Image 1 (cartoon, rainbow, N blue to C red):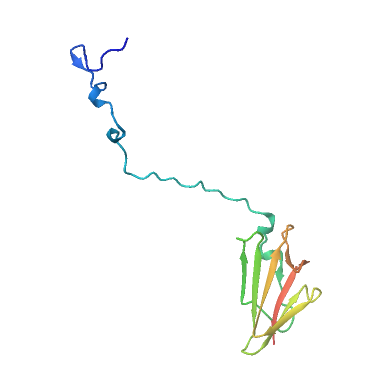
Image 2 (image 1 turned 180 degrees about the vertical axis):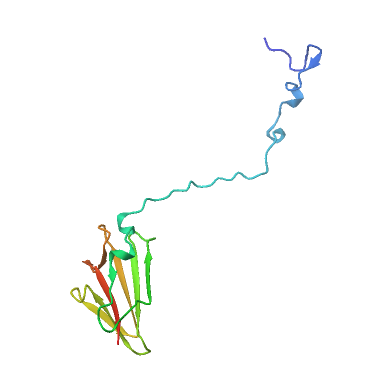
Length: 142
């Protein structure tokens, strides 16, 4: 049946089969000291429609005599839906600012020195303020 693992085969010793090569305890089994590392698979979530609004979805207008460019106009599309932040600063310290929405048809708001407006992108890729679609916005300072 089975050959004695230490017997000679064709005048040579089976180097892979010697009894002395067979581990007799778990301490005889070679182990690696190199830790095994794994990395989590990278997944990219698909963009939602409301993360895709662009700056030109709302027109920045300058029609009022006291209109001026917004100090900053940025989009953060890392949230569930994109957020647009527009900052309107006064022309001089202590001056008042006013932000007009849709040529005042959707209201206006402001205050002294600076005013920050936050618009939210909806599923129709439109910028909104309190649920109202804003197609035009203007920064004014006297």
